[in-house]
Image (cartoon, rainbow, N blue to C red):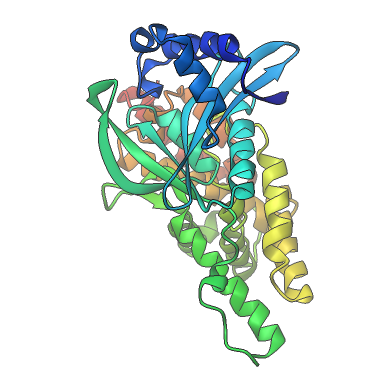
Length: 366
């Protein structure tokens, strides 16, 4: 897959793909097929020759897989518009590749943020954007092309550096302590990483920090159901560390195949970057904990993974469907993706199956 940068002379190609996208996914655009099909050639030329925008195609073997554009706005912001992936190319990481290219361009332009709007009914697109590092900006508006639909503004920082750089630590601080505090401050970002699971106690989604805390409490309460003897303290360390990489890699929803295409590569790179903030001895220790969880090579890691898969079932149960409905998954798909619970606890896997079966009977999952 290659990214093609469009410019003067590409008007007809750009028009063809743009109109195809408008016809295929009208709610993804602020414009309409009817309006743009009537544009004069000058309009297409102006879009491709502005020094305040970029227009990209994802191409493979001569076929266009997707497209997007970005516009420079006031305040050091690049606004992404017209993100579209051809139906036959979905689930292959095309959108992520386009977004990463726009992010690199934005950094080169000295910009600090990417923004975009996503229609509220388009849960898969929202999940993809959030897995690419976008966060809700707290702004809503009617979709310009269909005012009966609301859309939300999402934002992602680019080229922003470490959190501690916003308020540097005092000079003369012990070097080891400074590295540790830099890491401790940086992982505050975990509180801003939204997952797809809805909270049982409030009408919003949980964040990664809340998820990790919930898993830790589940380990304390449910350890007796582990199939093998476990060191509870070690298991707590595993669940506290397991999602830290999502600070840089973003959350990858379990049921979103497209978002998971390059998950392993993103998370490995994020682990290298994040744990390197610590002194070498602690960096190696926390990285080893993360690797242990990922590889499930110990009884503690298998039970920790079981908690990670079991907890969202409870939240979906309380939401009477939750992400099962959001991603329109089948009960068989849920069972297949949750079967790893049985590697750590047969008793909890039995309970999980009972919840899934009853959820299916009640119509909460297909």
